[in-house]
Amino acid sequence: MALLNGLARLLNEEASRNPNFADRLDALFSSAPVGKTAQRQRAKPEPGNLPDAYAEFWSRGESEFRLWLRDQPSCVLHALIRRHDLDATRRSAKWKDPEKLSAFITDQIRSRLARGSAFLSSGDTPQRDPTI
Image (cartoon, rainbow, N blue to C red):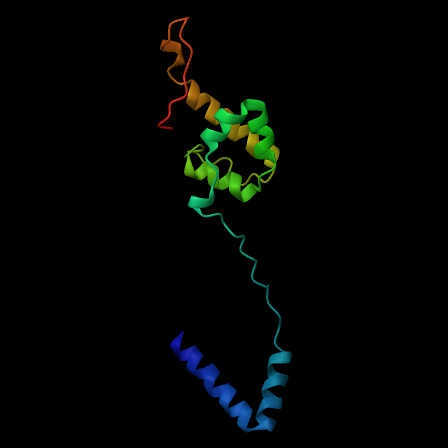
């Protein structure tokens, strides 16, 4: 990279001193084939900026939570899946549809929260675990 940067600086200096050289350089680069443009990188949300999915699930309830998730951008939904390790097989990695992603997240969180409920007696109700 240092070699290419040095070459570019040298070409720029010579082009600024010699207008004929600058014209020839422009002609050379204008006839060069145009390659693919670099794809724009999407801004990925930082882990600190992600909403707490479990707290939202408890405060909103399942149906409202699912609707709330649909309003989130797909990059946030994918970040939530990664943060909480909801998809070990990464089958949802290429999904773009927010409705499909929100249904997946809701189902995974609901199943995680229901783990162990089979061991409760019939009179017991699952309580929210404050450590989650």
